Length: 430
Image 1 (cartoon, rainbow, N blue to C red):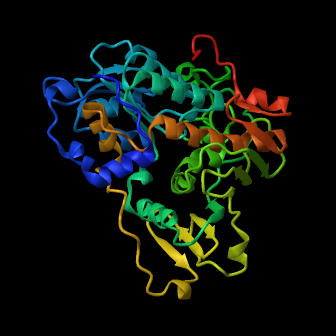
Image 2: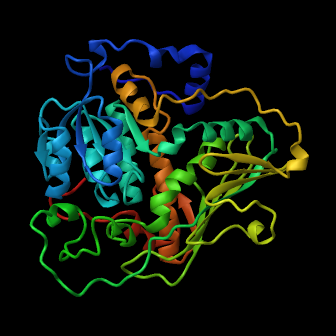
Image 3: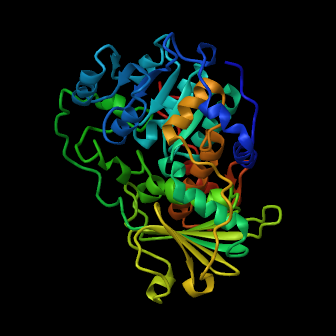
């Protein structure tokens, strides 16, 4: 496949609305990609949990390789795809010939190691959010994706749902006026715990050293996997790393946000091993063309905007609030509301300018076959990931960061460097 021409997100949407959607529904020729059946040959890295859902979403293609560090999970997946080659080490999967595309659904600390190898070997890549474990990794992945010309998609599945698209249209239409303030909140928490002192034997079906991958060596303990790795700095980044790419995606999309210039955070005392019970992060973004500067505030672990305590918002769960000069726009994954309701009585939604998605995974598959764009490619997803991870850097340093995105550096805060770049274990270099 020839490298695809670069296209902006706004340009893509305008083209789609103007008729370029035909490329998404056109017949796929063999020359566009895939094997003799016209299907992609896909390697799956990670097969359980969120990975299982991603596998189901691409099962209509040719699943030719499966990889997981847990032989039990791997065996279950192989029952449905018995002809697929099986691996415990994704580096070996990527040595297999004939793989067109790869789906990466591992813990955060191995996202970049797998994704970079896949891109550099000429594969299209779908990777779960966040794109990487550190800012340095996220930037490296975005650069590799741009150089490769391959189809990429970050696993922010809600981006493909209609509600987000209608909210973006409302904000961009000026329905609530200029937006200088956004609040994003998530109730869940990943936190707590000391490093285990016990060293129980590793079950024979788990290949723990491969699970550690680039992370510092430590003894096996069930406190880390299969799910609780998000609580540990060596493997995840708590609730912020888990959920910010989903929820902050909406203001980033609607307001054309990319790199903040300031980041400050508050939370409980920093623990050297595990992530905080709650966090509040303020991201200061500069003006973008005619759009004014905006502060995006993130809350997790039960913290929420003061407007809830003042009874000025309906009691929804997780969500996002745009504060405009002319009103408020409240949204969650599946619904949105203009507030105060009395001010918007009889309001007519602006004409639709963002076409419906064929599905988040399907968008990536079609991109791999036809060269059509993806909305959450690794350029957009990389910047979104960097922003999310910066909140943890600000929290762990205890400093208000003045961010220089070109240098990937927190100016005047040298202690941030050890969190922006982490040296991987030997054999797992990126």
